[in-house]
Length: 190
Image (cartoon, rainbow, N blue to C red; front, top):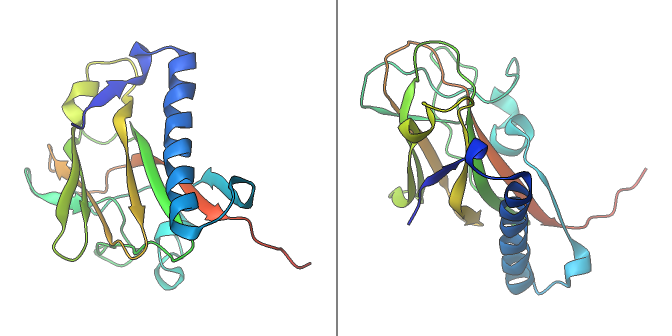
């Protein structure tokens, strides 16, 4: 079952525990999948541009921005390129990574509460992995929440992550996802 837990309703210790749960889940899957020891696996926060947006379409992008929300009730990708109009991007997880989504923050200031829900879908058929009701966090001081359970993607998963327009604001929504990239340690040659 997937639901949002507003950040302001849980202690700092619980926030730490939920992030640690996401790390542990990703690391456990990495050990199983790659047959690596835990000392050869690392985690880091995802970067919207370098991890999800192809380099050829990333110029001019500065951070989390979905496709423009044009029609109430329609779903729009949280990953969009810099074309006019912005096109949806459905990134594929690289061979050496596991993506673990554990949190959402609604950063948009345009329009009142721009998105109604957040969906995580997988593959070309876009089968539903998780669905979160974003309206559950709008009455709070900060529109920020943890997922009841982390949502993971691994190679060769295609990540179709979308928001449902609650208001047709005509611009992209700044729906930021807390995501950890789990990957093997790699040698850096300088």
